Length: 331
Image (cartoon, rainbow, N blue to C red; front, side, top):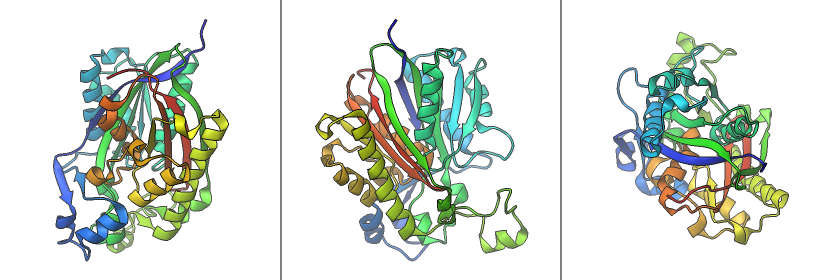
């Protein structure tokens, strides 16, 4: 019998209606459209508004989009993973609520958190469940409501992040398609340079912390930029060497949408032409766990069965890596 591999067989996505443009940000902080565009490549980002609406709302919408497009019965889903850095609540699983709301009543579910690398690491996890032969249908959702962690008086971070969600379905494949190999890494020393300090168990939220805005995301830009450029490009290079995949054989580079300069630097390092690099940062900004599946959704109609995709991501903490996947269907 042929070896079972884990292939993506469907994608879905959701972004909120409200568009936060650079022009609007000019009224909130000391910045301007030219400065933001030049340094990040971002023109606008989507923001989820509405009392009580959190990451699960985004995840449910993206999952429902996939279910409708694929025409699947949610009761056939075995596992739901929600990759996120912004769960709805502490202690209560966002994935469990998402699974129940979409009708995946026979699935078990859990959250996976590795900052901006959450979806990439989730791809590895979902694939392992499929390759084990025990499970036939794994729904992986990348979703984040980053606006819940952002101080809109801090121009260093509020220009970067947006809200959104993307979903993919992993199923068994016996044609040699799907996830081929991976190179995943982490370094805990990076937690000092990108995180939200207060609100976790080390530093529970206090009135004093709230008054100082210490529950919001902090980023030491230069350090994060330098590490992101080096590690994403290095991981992509290593997966090419590991799989003996020539750069000419790459059909698409699917790279985390953190900053246009980081995207370009990663592409240049492995000598990939711009037309092979998926980008949508100009529309959505950095949606953290949602960037990779949102790219797949935006480019789905251009993907062909057998295409070679190289994924790369970098996140706070630090976390990073690269995955090589062969696309499994024609849209």
